[in-house]
Amino acid sequence: MPDSRFFRALGPLRLGALAEQSGARLGGGADPDALIADAAPLEAAGPEAIAYLEGGKPDAVIATRAGAVFVRAGDMARLPEGAAALIVSHPRAAFAQAAAALFEERGFTPGAGLIDPTAVV
Image (cartoon, rainbow, N blue to C red; front, side, top):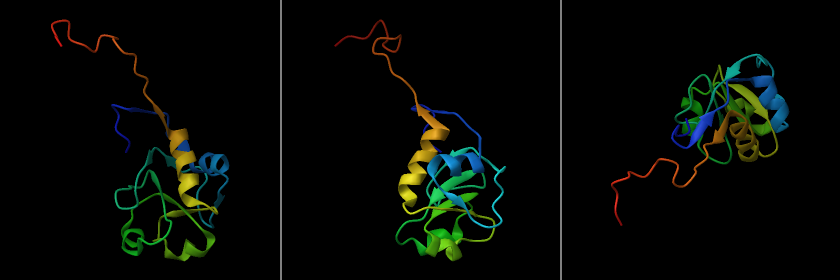
């Protein structure tokens, strides 16, 4: 999960909505109403997280517990049971779009009470 000091969670969001927003097609058997609340690498993803598979990582995809994974059509068969396929041409880009829908950057205002009044430079 993105660091909560820097990112604010906006989810959970429905898998179908994330697929639509990122231009993905849901693989057979994927539940469009499943809730996704996190974005993580394949190795760290849990059942409520999205991840992506691009390039290698054969061991990571076999062991992933991700609820959904952005993949190219040719990589669908590599997903473990229980991981929904989000089929796209560019998995990493689609993952970034979905993560942006799930999280927003926390703003920072210099001098907004974050500097101790006794601090000296």
